[in-house]
Length: 453
Image (cartoon, rainbow, N blue to C red; front, side, top):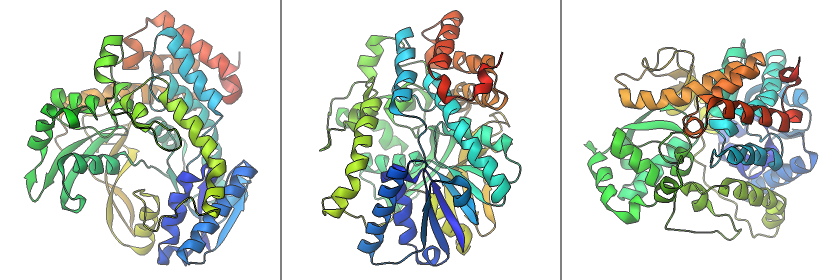
């Protein structure tokens, strides 16, 4: 029996989306073994018990294995999903607090900027281990990577891969479509859209329902405070560049130079008039609005929640969802296995898919998925102003991937120097000092070749 392997299954909440989707799919459940892998035995045990509780609640049986050994998990793998978070919260805090000391204010720091580039170095150390093992054990398998920074990781993995097929997956396109439907009161099944660009900065190039463009209604939202205030940065990007982007305002504010370089701009565009803290004390809106440090607090509380997850499920306090998630992972496997065509926005190497972007960058474009595999689609007439925004992020991603592949500290410095938010605050000497400090602080988490004399 071929396997679907989830590497990083100990995250529990996120990995359970895939387990549930798998269990709800009769054709996959009867065709594949699902293998849960995590280096943390305690978290793996929680993930296993949670998966079994979900299966029992759904009234289905399945073939399941679990291991802390990567090579064991990869035996007979057809699809490998990487969903792990490298390091501990203290490492993410360093990637946030050291740049902040220099005046670089980040929100999440998982895509570009100092935090995104160094998270890339930390995660690629582990992702390269997964990829290299796959090349030896299951070279014909797909690697579906969910780990950020998505674009930098996709570039580096794709350049290193020999036979393994590398695809980057994210849910920002699906979530943006759902959010916009909520703003406009549109039923999701009536929506038709074309979305393309790069991960965390793709744009709704076409957005319509019943054959009619919804952009006039979206532009009307600029004058509706109850809507505009929920997504200020994205609406401002749309106001000035013409299209709505796929990443939230909080994330989006740290990708460009317009919103975080002065305190008055942060207060104007990154505040949130609708604070809402959930029952677990997680303020999602603070993170979405771009409040400094909110992401760290969210991660801290989510990690505390993991160890209560199964306990709550066992006690009936945690509801077992009985519908599939929005995640693409299992949907793609179904489409390939069952030759059931679907379209999905995926992260792949560009080539000439978007001709105004560099061939060696990673793009997020519509892809046709079927029994023949994954076929990315070319996007014609991509607006130049959107390409200009993308290229700013791509500069960071390509330099960061180059630095990671070649263990080149100078290239990592150059990647961070090209970050729009960073360069709006600091000079080159300051960026160099900050980069060196980050290297030293995160030395234990980064490949030792970066420190060779």
